[in-house]
Length: 256
Image (cartoon, rainbow, N blue to C red):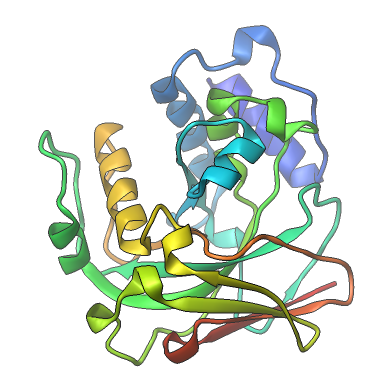
């Protein structure tokens, strides 16, 4: 597992891709894949920033050849300040995604009984607009398969968190809440919360229980970004993106 993680992290650090892991390094199960992914934290100088959820829509699942969502880690070194600059580098996916993100206020440790949505939301401190800029270490990520994609940190790459929403988000219908991504001042894609596993709150609850099943604690202070609510928007050097979640706020990033 250490060898698989080291190989993937080297490609991440060097902005390069590989065809696939060597056959003897491919995780055989979902649990093994998460154990490979967990070793990524050893490359970070800071506590884990949070978690992402990949493939929260049927279209997204078909695109990468999986039948359900995947969890990945957000390393602190991969977080860009709101309004900051993101280097395009050798990014293979070349897209920006507008997301609903939650900052946790209480720990949700592993347990035998699944967490209810009510319990998970009660542990949330704040909701934020966010932009994710995903990427993969696999040249043909759509063919890599579930276990390799989880080991590859569920296509995590760079992340931008906007300010905490000042509106009473708990009183809103997040499934029906609309968002819009602007590119260079023009509307690029419209979306809605129901594109995220039916509701961003459902996605957050899925993540809490996915971590619990695999012995991980969703910790207070960590951020969970729940998957794109818009069709991923192509990015290029010189672009500036603004993600707008209406009364829930805005988040922005420039591509350099």
